[in-house]
Image 1 (tube, rainbow, N blue to C red):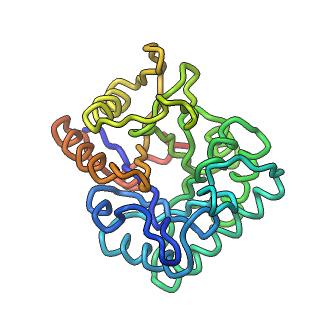
Image 2 (cartoon, rainbow, N blue to C red):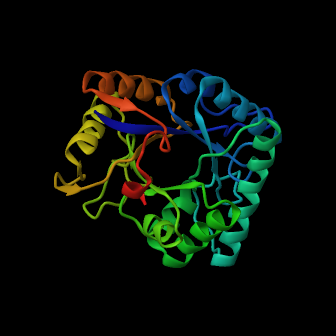
Image 3 (cartoon, rainbow, N blue to C red):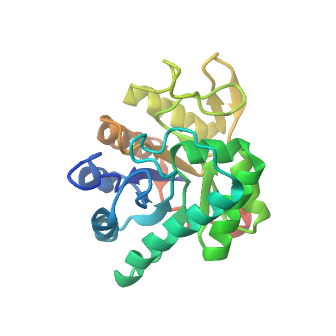
Length: 261
């Protein structure tokens, strides 16, 4: 039976602002990427989200982003590898502290938004993130866009890596995500998303916006938690996986380390 991890960006609310449908979504995922206060989240939300993950049996991971609440971490910033290393350490450390007092061990780290996209194509930024994760805790799994420089840097740093695919985003022929500024950047139909993901998991193929296909490794699939359709997407994926005999599992659960590193 094939397996897949389902991850979602969680804990992105802050102060009086509610983002996403976290409590409902938790029932359908296996891994939660928890915002660490830079692009979203705050100290209260971080602790609450960790407790929600623990209650639902969902693995928790740090979701470090650029320091840009106004832009939700999705705007590029001029940052150098030292900036990125230190901001990654800072954010992982903040979530680790809350996890520690709650008796929770973090499973993974997945960069957010523009930081994620920049690190997928920039060797220096990718290396900075991978080294930050490795130096904080080499047992953490690094999530990165399938086939990207971030995945390569994680392996080079000796980390277990999960190659990530996306249910709600479209792809370019080179395997990169379509920029959000493009009108075709997002998949709006849950049925279409499920079809695409099933093909990625079972056939190892993804379809680009021009209709071409390319090989892809799908270890974990992401649904963006801030999307109004997040709950509909995770429900549809859960149903489709069941119908196709694909089991949802956390990235560290019954995965041979040698095949993922």
